Length: 611
Image 1 (cartoon, helix red, strand yellow):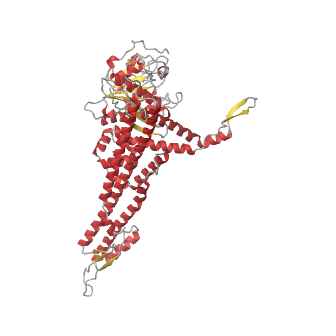
Image 2 (cartoon, one colour):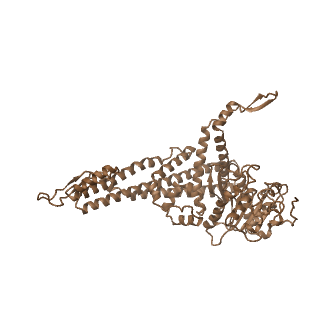
Image 3 (cartoon, helix red, strand yellow):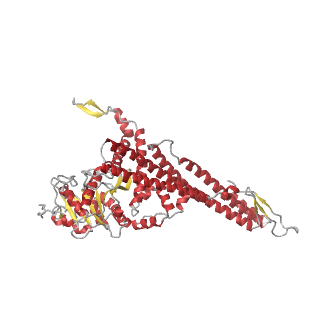
């Protein structure tokens, strides 16, 4: 790039283009939300039949197209701002060098050469003549730099050294501009869609590639912005986000959606937007990878004769060869995609009502998502930031991304009933799979380290709900722990501050503390449910319940624990959220702030252990 081109370049024009792309991204976002949360929701709530189903399929496709436009235009905006930032920096360096050269009496040629005037002490009665220094750049080689310094020092005309410095500064600025142009040109060219009307897995995979490319090229640009607080509290995170301008927020969302989506304390709408990008990218990548793996051989089993003459069923050699090469990854991809399908099903259920007398489901908010390992998923029914009543549910043993659907359904059921009981006040119910739950009932669940390891993240999440809430009145917050999830709730109270007003435990094997008063909520606000046929509390009495050995370990179902024992009319360990049950109604009453209406069991003597 030459001097004239760089001088004529106007970074503001690229910034204006970036503003246009950002505006388009915002319009696409608004259109997506309207399609999903108003138009499609209205159809689900009012219409049934083949025509309605076909219309919903088309609207789903349209919303996906808008989401793709939103994401790609946001990237284009950030890329243009990043390019403008780099070019503006180079232009400032060039202009400063030109001004300094002019002030020193030097003339700069179109090619970057610098002509310096005569000057210095007379030599043989003459003032050393001026001259011209060829355009160059600052040397990064120590030897060359030393030679250059020596030449400047021994030259009789002091203006020579100045000219060399000006030429180097001009060359550096031109090189910086040329490098920026070469760096950004392919990134900007890559930001284009296929010439068809369908957003495919390949398109979303390309989004991730574009994101990585723009992120790499825009490192200086992003580094120039206020950085998120390192290990910051939710309040710190909230303050950081609030302090950003629109351009900075758009840059962080487009380049670091995975990081933004994890930050407790940020507005739920922001976290949802970030995590939806990660969700769509991950789903596309997983589906493409799964399609590339050969299907398992059909002849999985065969029989061999044992020494005793019996036939033994074993895997075939072909199947074992496939399993050893692909099995673990194939299983992970399938299970993860099953979980993503369940999450998408919740997105697609917005507006759905159980009958004409009930409200349709509110929009879902994806407050956390990852497919790594056992997976993470945090899904809210309704916006927690504007809800008067919040409920956060922690699932237990065997919970992971693949089976998230059942846990989401439980909080969907809770939202419906709690909304009916909340006197018109908004309710948000949240499924929080933000920890590694024990995956094996026998091998894993007797140990409390899963709860201890996950408790800090749970505490941060609850504090984040407090920081992001927008109402004048602090929300009423209920924490619900099922099975081992109640153990995590107890660990969170044991190790930190449980930012909640009520705690509900269901089918609890123990909460790591022996008394309800140690769960960090007001007295009388710990509630428990134990259904007939649920053996987990009995198992917990010999596991990780309390810390005072006086017979069995204490669990919330024991009278001496001090919880209010709610009536249940369901069976077993998994029925506490059955539709139409008192078990569900009692929980919903607590969530809606009407604990006074909960039906309680008559006190019964605590079972005593005999040595």
